[in-house]
Length: 336
Ligand SMILES: [Fe+2]
Ligand SMILES: [Fe+2]
Image (tube, rainbow, N blue to C red; front, side, top):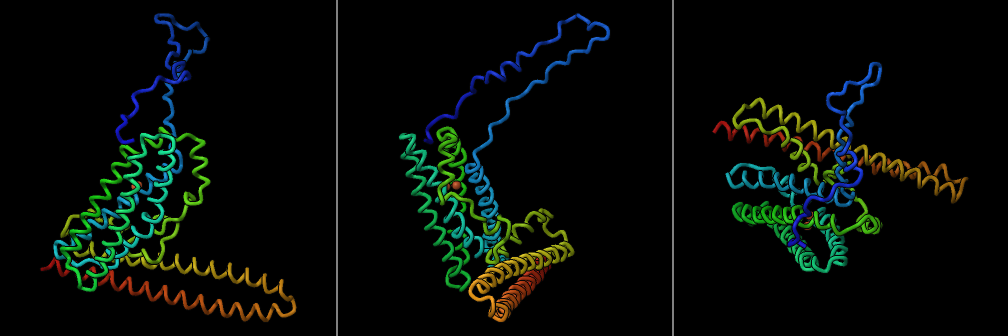
């Protein structure tokens, strides 16, 4: 499918033709007194056709992957330059790639590409090679993640991690560029509304919340999410002062607290729902004993919630302490 040329300009749609031929006022003729002056009809450009939602989702996921790859590249450059980096961030980046794009983004593309290959025999080879590339990339991602673990344990050098990480990023960009330039437009051309409707009913194509870019950041990826947010604030010139580092550290700490709050709130809501469901069930079993059994059950669930919130707080304190250590290390580097 990659070989096809992009479509050339289409004939204008009949409605657009009509609009283009909108009558002009006759030159040199003044409107009669009291007559409403005929306004020229505005030129109506044909509306750009909206992309099907599933295709739009693939584009959005590419933007997310690109921002994660950008963060990974920054971390690798810092490692290559001998600077200190937050190893949690480095780990979470590749953990995210293994957890999300390899489990959801690429399999979804495989399903959509499969449908294109059914309708367009000429696309079968390209589809096959892209699907094999997905498998190969998932394997490489697991290798890079393994490398990161070993690098954290001092078993793999920084140079080796930087080499494998850079190769992974370059390949990921190349793959996404091929898809966006050649494959996605072809998908859009081949698949009709009925195909998209059928695809949307496939369970594997149902929306699943992204653990970093979705409505809630999952705790496993909180350091990376914080770094992604703070990279928006970066852009300040190197060496532009210790105060900035302090301000940045305060902002990051506030984000740690806010993310911990979101996690705790999510846990509390989940516990309330479980307590209610179980309470209803206990009343169904026996209305006489239900109040006592409910009280005992709520106490048990309450204790579990306290333990979870304590764990979230402990992790948040650890994160804040790491943010502060990172700030001190960066100030030391600037001073040296
Ligand atoms: Fe892909
Ligand atoms: Fe993709």
